[in-house]
Each structure stands twice: as structure tokens, then as C-alpha cells.
Image (cartoon, rainbow, N blue to C red; front, side, top):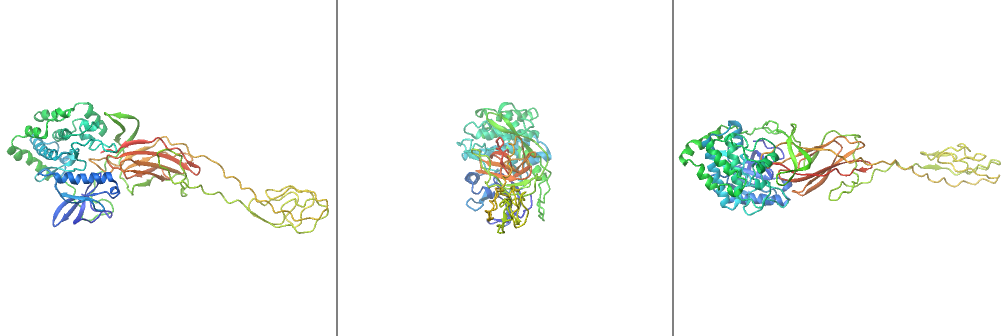
Length: 560
């Protein structure tokens, strides 16, 4: 558990907040207290409060959780969906996730897996009886409390008659623990999808490994759809049941009630052995505790998480539907989130402020604010005194050159016909510099004042061209994710010639955010997306002459 930071509230509803339990796709989860009773308070992210899709999902979670009854859920105890930042409070389960138990203690024995499976089948039976499908059964959503396992997080639970595909085309769930029909977006998703996920959970609990191997989320998705699970390490007493749960055809999987009956060895045996082991593991597993003195950074030290590189592909990876991204491991790092996006990296070129310029027109894409380029240096001017002196003999240079006075800039010139005196030189004066006028022939006639010199024509500003379009860049997720999480990423690129500014287009089609951000550096940090969002990105280079065309636009679903 993390300490509260300055940006965290201290009170939500009637609950005093004590620390941060976690961060999910829709918000932050706090440990709260009222009348000495502890609760888990889930507060929706502020930037999502104006998004109807997220509010609907949050309302769905409240409705789904309140519809559940039984000993294997974290019951909802309070909520305010209409608050400025909607929230709900559930029973606090002071226990680790199944993930944490397996990581610290290793695989469970056969009887303990049976005990776990029986409790989870009872939980699924209650969910399905309410007309819902959980859709996200996985080790990270199973808490092991003092009285046994609890199934949590109904944030994406949906009615059994509702199609798997959201209006924005985002599949809900965790790919590593999805059924084939979820991954392929095949029509309506029913209770059998939860049974498939439970089969994966039992195999993981019994072996400590995913039955479809170790690879990235989309690699596992491909194997789940097209290959058979590797169950050689699953104990023989469980392998047959697990294999039936993992049938590709939903109709061939057992119901939760059928599975529970086959897993049960008699309630007394399960309580005395398997359930007791689960409870003991829960008590022995290390759970981070709150530091009493919060600092500017999190007070609970955590090992650095692996970064997942978003490798942009030109070709789609097929698992029954088009997937435009693949995840792979990257380097370590810690995200620096500042609002929706923040600049990072070193500036290139001049350190002077960058003025946005009008972008190249691109249909369907936003553009940076258009401003005129800074004006060139004001054209030079000349103050010219008229000639009033008498004629000087028979000279014929009455207008031979600009005469005495002062000149500014380049307009003042010295013609060959005269100097800076007040009397025009005799003889034919050639036009001098930019300020002289052609010499003439006066034939001894009295001199008259020359007409004022015309204002010089400004020298045209030098012409140039915008930078060439960018052809390569990279986007890297800051961290991995178990479940639905905030998934910030950093875009980076090489220095482009003749460039003073880079524009990043960020189009989150799920949360309806479509903006352009500018930076003088070679990277930009985007902190808006979270798991399941459908995001499109592009970059372009710019200088004082304009902006290049946008790079090729890449779209992807933010992973779980």
C-alpha cells in the first residue's frame, strides 16, 4: 500500500482515506475508514468524469456488485455515482492476490486447487444467476482472505445477453485469461467464458505457469485461439477437468455447478486441508504496509517494473481479428506523469521559444494553432533634407544624389555626383546606393528642390521549406499491467534536419480525446490512456516555414 500524496483526497464521503491500495483502469483504490471499519474506496479518475462511456461502466460496476450475494465476493457497502468524482466503497479484504501467493510460495497442492476451484465455481454460479458474466476472472482478481478466496472487480461485468464488442470496438477483459470467443469477438459472450478463465486460473495455481506458455499478451491470445494447452505439469487428478474447461467450443465446457461437483472431495476434507492451506498462505504472504510518513514520492519501495515496448507493425497479427500492435520487453524506467502529457528529452536547435505554425492539411486529423511567422526586420527609412541653396554655376547635377542630412539603414547612399554638402554637385550624378536619383542636365537653369526620395522597397525575407515528413518513431509503455491499468507511454524519435518543433498527434478514440502536443525535444510523454483504449498516434516536424506532412498514423488497443 502506498502513502497518500498531495494530489490524493483525504476524505471521500464519510470515509477517511488512509492510503492507496492500487490504481486501475477507471480510478484509484484507497483504504478508507469509518467508525473503525475498513473499506476499499474506488474513486473514478477526474479526467474521466465527463466521459459518458466511463461513467456508464462505473454505474455498471456498482449495479453488478450490489446484485451479488454470498461469502466469496467483496460486498459493496456504500457509493455515490452522482458525486463530482463518483466512488464506491466495498468490504476490505486484508489478503493477498492469488498472483502474490503463487509468486511467494509456489504452486498449490492438488487439494488446495480443488478448494479454490469449488469456492470460485460458487462465486460464478451467483454471478451467472444474476444474469451477468464477470469477463475478467484471473489471479489478480482473486483475493485470499482469512475466510477463503474472494472474487473482486466487477468493473467490466456485463449482461449475459450483451455482445462482447463495445461501441468503440474495444474488447473488455485481460487477453491472457480470455476465452477464444472473447479474443475473436464472436458475438455474445456467455457464462462459458468465465469457466474457460477459471480453467486457466486452476492450471496456473497448480503449476505456477500459464498453460499456453510464456510470451506476450497477444502471443498468448494467438495460442489460446489456435493451439492446445500444455497440461503435462498439471496433476493428473485435475488435468482432465482443466482440459474440459479449456475446450475451444463453449458448449463443450462444464457449467460452474458441474465443475464444482466434480472438484469437491467432500466439504469436510476441503475445509480441513485445502482451504486451511489457502488461508495459511494468505497469512504468510507479504503485503506492503503503509509508511507513516509520506514523501514526495511513494513511500513503499517497489522493484522497477519492466517496460513494454509498443512495436508498431505495418502488417496485422491475426488471432481471428486484426491486431495492429505487439508488445515486447523494453528497458527499465519510471514514468513522470504531468497532466495529459509532458515534454521530455533535450531540446534541439535554438533555445528560443517555438512559435506554432499552420500544419499541412490532413483530413480527419487535428492541427496545431496557426499563427503568422514573426515579421521580418522593419524596412529601413531615410530622413532627407530638401535642397534650398543657389545653383553652382553650370553644373547639371541638380538631382545627382541624396544630399546633406542623415540617413538610416541602407537607404542612404553616396552617388558619384556629390558629397554630403548642402549644394548639389556639378555634373551628371549617378544614382548612389539605394538613395540616389539619376543625374540630369540643368543647362544653367536655377536649381529647384528635388522631389523626396521614394521609400525603398523592403528586401524580401529569405525563402525556405518545411522539414521532410518523418518516417520513423517509437512508442514505449512505461510499465506492464495486471488487470486494467493506467498505461502511459513515451514517444521518441531521432533529430530531424532543419527542425525546431515536433508535433505529436494523440487520438484516443475511446475517451474522445483528439489533440496535438508540441515539443522542442525528441520525445513526448503521454499519460492519458489506460487498458482497453483504442489509440492512434502520429508525429510531424516543423520549423519557421511550416510543418511537414503527418507521419503514417498507427492505431492500437492499449493492453491489459
